[in-house]
Length: 161
Image 1 (cartoon, rainbow, N blue to C red):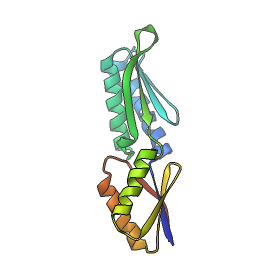
Image 2: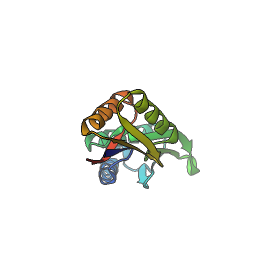
Image 3: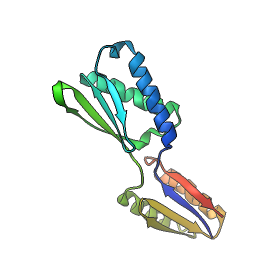
Image 4: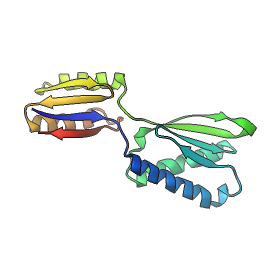
């Protein structure tokens, strides 16, 4: 029985490398000199701080550009609205999506069932496990999911024969 997992996750090493490049560019750019513009991060979010909305928009654009250059799918980034923080500074939190939401997992399982391919799918937490008797049907399922859900940055892991 061949199986694979469908999930949404980022390569954390590349994310950290991209964020290091963002911090370096912010430190070196002329329009950020002498300002409080900064980027901090944790495993699940990136926090951008600046003096005005223009700086926050510039930092957000730099983040998306650097992620693209590092080969990290920018669809894993979910920017929130800007907030005013202490001392009239502006802050934006960008969430890093990790794992498939329950609603998306249900949609994926339902879509797989409508294909009439001879595969079984089940939801295991934030991962959808797909199993089938033939490798070819699993590869067809992967191609179907890529076409059916272009807005989701799906990753296919643990392909076992």
